[in-house]
Length: 334
Ligand SMILES: [Zn+2]
Image (tube, rainbow, N blue to C red; front, top):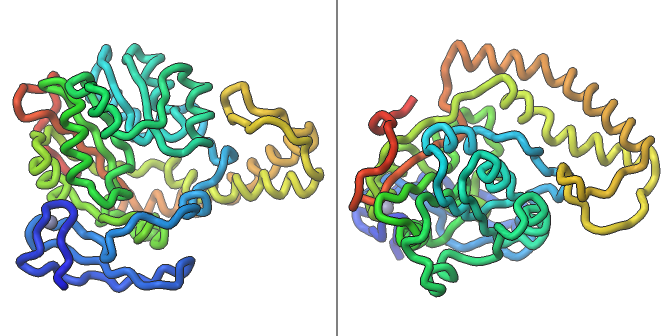
């Protein structure tokens, strides 16, 4: 049977098979097709991961990213001025909501992960819910937000078009939707193939596919930007797994830490690690970072020379019924 594209509903002309991907953890194959009508790559079968998959892929609280604005947040703050009522769908640890509140946005967030919600609530008390877009709509909250953000969400969904159309209904007339997705043209040296494959990521995008998708969902696309690669970004990609390893190694070196409530790193609510463990972890992190600096700098120089595409796309779109309050240039792609 010809697979149906989840981003536009087309099954004809027939999509092109682009990859037969073997998922080692599940010991099964997923086919990846490129829709001939809209250009989105999608998985067959189009099924959400089995329970527990995300827990295996994502680190626990030791993976808390810190309170600094990442590329997604920085781009949003630059393009969409406060004050504005913002809902962050898939808010994760709540860092974006926390920073947005500090910057004067009336921000709130929603996520599915109980562990992340617990941390997010400490960062943004009273602002986090475990609710779906459908829940908000059922509560009569359509037309309530000036902006909705979905950072790194679309690629996980088995119903992206329906979700984007629901997100549109949450917006006031003229409201803005900001999304980020991995850019399938992104530098392969910076991409974890298993991370960016089914069932973790069910769709793959490029600027054209993302623009058409947002327009079908009822938006006017204001801009699409490819993520620029910085030396810091490259360094963090090298060091992130090593930082986790450093904490683990320090724990082994110093023995187990006393049990306590679930930690919320960076929030002040985290339980204090033993002094020795903290010192060893810090020492290992400095050592690992120094070791990673050389390959990261080499890769950065290579990027400056060959200008590969960055790993992600940021899109900003507005409901088509109003002019958005933004003075950004038209759709652009680095
Ligand atoms: Zn399609």
